[in-house]
Structures are given as C-alpha cells and as structure tokens.
Amino acid sequence: MKDQEINRARAVYYSFFSQLFVYSADTQTYLRLISTVDVLIESSLDDTSCEALKRIKAQLDPMSNINLVQEYDNLFHNPFSSTIRTTASYYDEKVESGKKRVQMLDFLAKTRIRRDEKTYTDLEDSVGFLLTLMAELLELVSNGQEQYKTLTHCIFSDVINGFIDEFARDVYEHENAIIYKDVVVVLPCDPVTTIFF
Image (tube, rainbow, N blue to C red; front, side):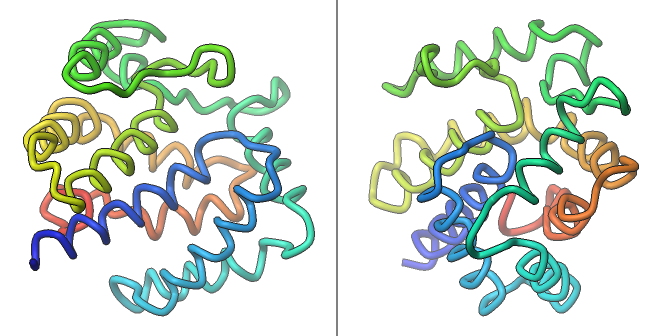
C-alpha cells in the first residue's frame, strides 16, 4: 500500500511539472494547475518547497493564464533572449533529435502510449513529453499495473536524470524567469528523492 501512495504522489508531482512545461492555451488545464498548486502547498515536501509554491500561486492569475503563457514564451521561444533547450538529446549531444530520442522511442515501444503528432509537436525526449509520460506511467503503476514500474525507473535513470539538473539550472538562471524560478525550487532534482526516484 505504501508503494501505491508514493507512486500516486510521484504522479501528482510529475503532472504538476508537466502542466508547466507543456504549452497549453486550454483554460481547464490551467485551472487544474492552480488546483494542483493548492494540493501541493497543503502537502509540500519541505518548507522551501511550500514557500516556492505559495509564490507560484501568488503569480498565477485565477482568471487568466496570460502571465504563465508569456513567461513560458519568454523562456522557451523568445528570439530576443536566450532560449532554453528542452530535449535530453540536446543536453547529451547538442542536437535536438539524437540518441536520447531513440532511447525514448524504444521505451515507448514497450507501452501503448504514443505522442499525438497532430497536437503535440515536441519530441519524445522533450521535458514536457517526459514529464507527462512519467505522470501517466506512475498513475498506471499506482493503479496496479506493475509492468510499468521498471520502465519508469529506466526512463528516469537513463534519460531524465542525465540532464534535469542542467535544464533546471538554465531555467533558474534565465533573465526572464519569475514563476519558473520557483518551479525549479520545487523540482526535486536530487536522484535520491522519493518523488523523482
């Protein structure tokens, strides 16, 4: 039972980060994000995370996602400032579609989950896709589908863990990071953490 609770908590955290690193103009997704922030404030990992989550909540307008969308664009798409790369392949080989993407395609072949290329244009080794996939897989594991347990560990140890610290540093140090600076404070990059493995 304890493993199920830990995997549910991991799924909530991965889902929270997924909602922040996958662009969405959907109002319902934004409202779920605000609701998730409230849940995480109530059950934060530590005082530092709790304070960061409270600052995130203060920056999120309950009526509009414009602040979040603008900051997202400034960090990941603005040609007038440094742009943060989002793929594991880039951090591994300095190319956007490399060995880490191939590795993720191999991992995905072991599941029924696929990237919907019509609605999601980022690659399989992009931060947003990885976080979303991990949230889905951990939810399946917490609901008794143990066959995905090893896969979640492999994706974390072989792909995510290799670049997440550097990616988080790039986000935290970006000149336009405000909300996302606190997101990185909440992001548990330490591989021994109970949330990320």
